[in-house]
Length: 125
Image (cartoon, rainbow, N blue to C red; front, side):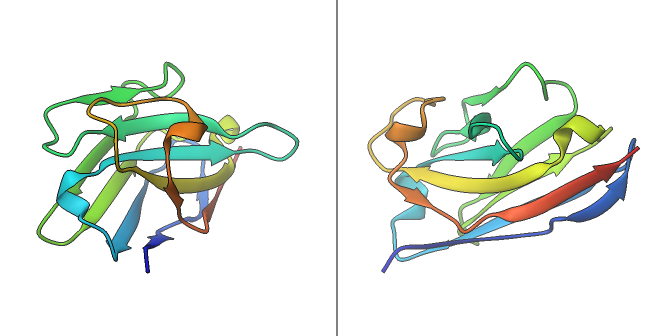
C-alpha cells in the first residue's frame, strides 16, 4: 500500500520559514520523481516544485523560485520543501506527490499517481 504523509505545516508570519516533509512508504522511492503542489481556497491545485529520482534535476514554479528549496533523502524515503521568505499568498494546503513513470519533472497534476493528504500552511501578514 502506497502512502505519502506530509508534515511540517503551520501558522507563520510573513517573512518566516517552514520546512515541509513528505514520508513515503510502499513504493520504490528511489525511482520516483517527486513533486510538491499547493491549493489555496477557491483556486486550482498548482505545481510548486519537483525533484527527480537522483536529485540531479529540480524545477520550481516562478512564484517560489529563490525562496523555496526542494530536496530528498532516499535513505529515509523522504522529500522536503524548505520555504523561506513566506508571503501571505503562499497560504494553501500543500501536497506531495509521486510520479512513478516520469524521467523528468512534470508540472501536470495528471502525471502524478500518488498523493499525500496535505498539510496546511498559513502565512499571516
